[in-house]
Amino acid sequence: MEVNSTSIQKLSSVFEKQQCWKIEPLAVELEYSVPSVRRFLSASGYYSSYTHNGVWYTLNSIPRFNSDSLWFYSDIGFSRSGTMMNTLVALVSKCPKGMTAKELGEKLHCHCHDMLFDLVRKGRLQRCKVARSYIYIAQNADIATIQRNAATMSEFQLPAEIAVFVLVEFINNFGSSCAQLAQALSRSKNVIVSAAQIETLFIRLGVKKTPPM
Image (cartoon, rainbow, N blue to C red; front, side, top):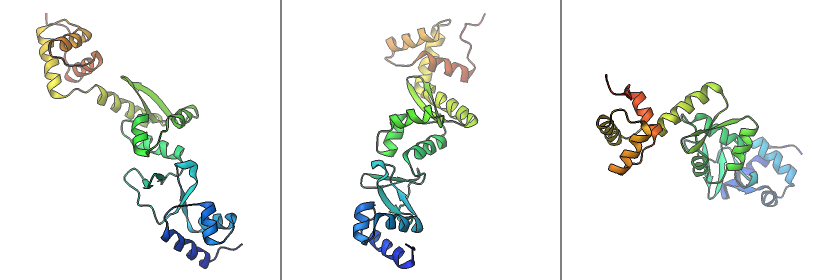
């Protein structure tokens, strides 16, 4: 069946009444077969949802995507990247410090752990551990290096007031290891800081961890 302007106009008018449709109810509404409606959608241009197994459709002209290239109609999610897999790769790849599964789930409004594992297994994303969290980073080696370094610095960077406590404790206890300083701060100031965070602070400030001779 040839797709003509009348068919496209009829399709557009139906989407003016309701912005998202499943294919079978849409075919009933248009009074055409499902294969015909699929041809109309292809000719007009459409997005299928990355949620709900991709069963919802909307026209290209309808979504107003946010800064993450996502658009939601109630609990139905659409993405400029199309599928959930492609969307996960796009979100992770453009984030300067990578993303955790929790962060991705919050953006996408759905759980995505299993798909993330699949993407790592298929070589489309990488996963690395930073402190206590796993972050997902791009497969591209150059981008991944930048993301990994940024995530590490972000995780280990201390607020200014905590850094002051660390330095005061260090001055008062020359020769203490980073782990010992962390334990001392926990006891004396009730400040929870890791040895890795203290180590990173010393590297950034060029502080030697041994007393001057």
